[in-house]
Amino acid sequence: MEDLETIIGLEIHCQLNTKSKMFCSCSTDFRDNEPNTHTCPVCLGLPGSMPMVNKRAIEFALKVGKALNCTIRDESEFSRKNYFYPDLNKAYQITQYDKPLAEWGKLLIDGDNGEKEVRITRIHLEEDPGRSVHMGTTDRGKYTLVDYNRAGIPLIEIVTEPDLRSPKEARKFLNKLRATLEYLNVFDSEKEGSLRVDANISLKGSERVEVKNISSYKGVEKALTFEVTRQRNLLRRGQIVTRETRHFVEARGVTTSSRSKEEENDYRYFPEPDLLPLRVASWVDAIELPELPDARRERFISQYGVSPEHAKTLTGGLKLAEFYETVASEDPALAATWTADYLLGELNYRDFSIDAMPSDLFRELLTLIKSDTITDKSAVEILRLILDAVKDGKKPERPQEIVSRLGLAKTSGDQVTAMIQEVIAEQQAAIDDYYAGKMQALNFLVGQVMKKCRGRADPGHLNTLLKEILDKKV
Ligand SMILES: Nc1ncnc2c1ncn2[C@@H]1O[C@H](COP(=O)(O)OP(=O)(O)OP(=O)(O)O)[C@@H](O)[C@H]1O
Ligand SMILES: [Mg+2]
Ligand SMILES: [Mg+2]
Picture 1: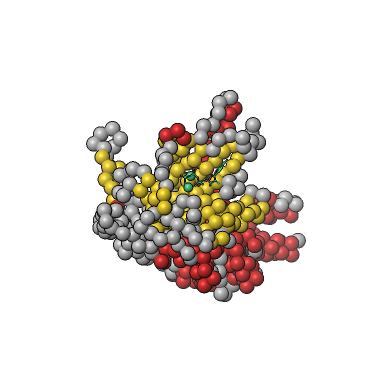
Picture 2 (picture 1 turned 90 degrees about the horizontal axis):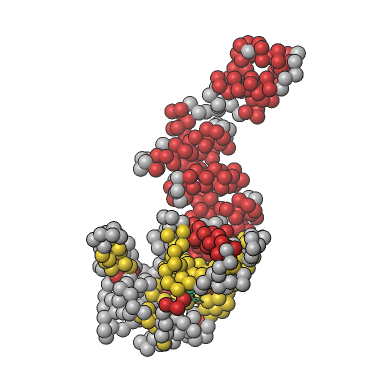
């Protein structure tokens, strides 16, 4: 039972960052504004109002279609998906049904067993519903407010074939997709709720379960991991997995049943009578795609000579890739190591994005490392001081200032030699041990010199130097 194959397919809703909404001219820049201030008769769905298609949204969706190697349909069509819910003021959503804008694409990912192609079933355009804001606690004073500022924000839904084989692979797919969308400059990954995922999962031979509306990438992996265990346990106990829609409770990391298949709505789709069919396939030729993650990765390898692993990490997000290119000039290999191995670790630890690190300060830090002014250990210390200042909302000190203030400049050769002589004079017992062939004594002596210079000597160099001096004495 343990090796029952896991089958996963994703439906990803992505808000396009156009200036105005999908079918009206209301601004999409609503996040800092009062509820219901970005609305008009069209996005409120008032009787008699007529939708108009946002050309920009179509262009953005076509860009995504082209980047994901889709075929653009010669004719696509908007449809009405009918259901009643307070955040859906018209009682229908304008979406696409059997004639989506784009079909049959693919995205290359770094899968569980190496590089892998994930097929894209379709990409269609639709409008976001409004947002329900639940007030009060569950047991008392509970009521719900509705904010229609979000109603009508352009969305694309990207549906994959059930080609993913593990929760981790699903996360990798999402990371690659997010990077691609960022590079295309069609969405803003930092805006809350800009990418929402429905994750479908089954164990081979059983029904699938759909976990709806997961709003974080980590959430998708967690929800799917929970489902693998839950479904395996059901089968192990001789029960069956029922086809149902489930909800992910982020705070507890579990999924709960929200409605079973029998209760699922019949949406009574029909073609949207207020909009003409779209014939936009010919626009695709004029769309020029920017450099996408795979191409940039190859360029990083050839132009900067960074390792494939570093190149993959550094091109995993648009801002990260741009950051690297602003700091790479002096010593690309050094910059790659310090960005990918050290900086990213420190950022993740603080739940920061790359924006938190001022690139001019990082460049200065790299110069100090390259000129051998500070040790790696001191460089990490400086990095932490800068990021902690940012975290506290303070203006970070420049690396050079920190070096002077804390006296982090590497101890010079002469000073080290002097300190070694001091230690040799002080530690006769250890010296005797060393000559008696006890190699631990050397480590001890290195430690003593390090202590004297407060860690500002290069450990490898110190080791060699100390050995040289001691061996000469024999
Ligand atoms: N056996 C399976 N196990 C896991 N996922 C599957 C399986 N079969 C299909 N899927 C995935 O389920 C998703 C189906 O999405 P689609 O939008 O076509 O239909 P739906 O979920 O029934 O409709 P809705 O849009 O209302 O959610 C796809 O991502 C597909 O890859
Ligand atoms: Mg769907
Ligand atoms: Mg679905």
